[in-house]
Length: 356
Image (cartoon, rainbow, N blue to C red; front, side, top):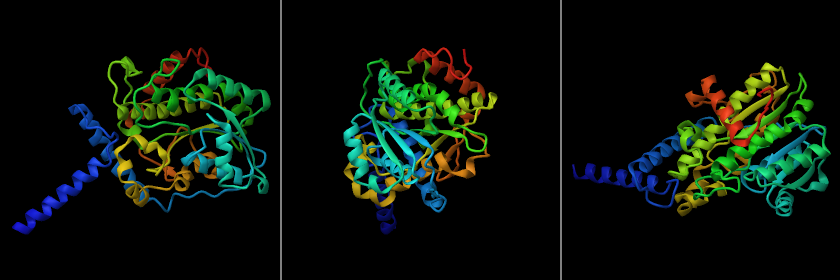
């Protein structure tokens, strides 16, 4: 009896420690709602880790030479994005990185790959994806230099950051993770449609997260001015990406446009995105059970180049290089359309692939 009690106490202690050091915030939750959000994130995180373990053999992609293709990627100077750039360059593509500091980004890429020994070409341009003026300027530079864009990978993002409003008065998660990329898709869509062919479609890849499974869209307070919790803002932005992915693919299909739009969950990956979380106290645990950035880059690259997806349906949500469980809300076309139109209104977009 005594031994049983001791074992249970040890188990409870381990469970508590696991919860405490994997919170989305270093602070103590201040309300039942915040505690509930933490429990929900713990659940999707555990499910995500199990999924990464079970399907680790699926998480692979074959690279092949594509010297005629132009890829545009937001972010890419660290973490998953840096490894995505490495793989695209090894496919001999022209890769245009939109980053805050082009010089630092170029040096980061050079630390991984010798640019003189590959057929790919790297171009770094300044971009603050959370600033809509910067997005327009970045898109303008690309449109002026290139008549087509084969791949657009919306990679840049933030996670669980303190509250901040951008210059456009958007909440930062919404702006960086979603709205900036939504606007960039809109601006580069003509170039993507020019690049796409029936036998080899252009592709848009939105790097999302399993956190979208517990996300909800707060239409009444989309910028969290009345109440803010980092985990809520993050999951909302990730759900936004997938709602948009589904509806945009429907619009493209209606026009028989040769463009695939895909959303991916790269996995639970050990990157700097966790800088605001309690996991920073146990970095050795992350290295033990999380994916490496290189492993996390495989599903985004699979979505971007795999011939296996060429004849399939777009609007998919992928994890470990396969179709994965999606938030039921996203399966409702009316809700996808409602949010897509809402996004257009937020950004003042009057026409988006036929939407007037």
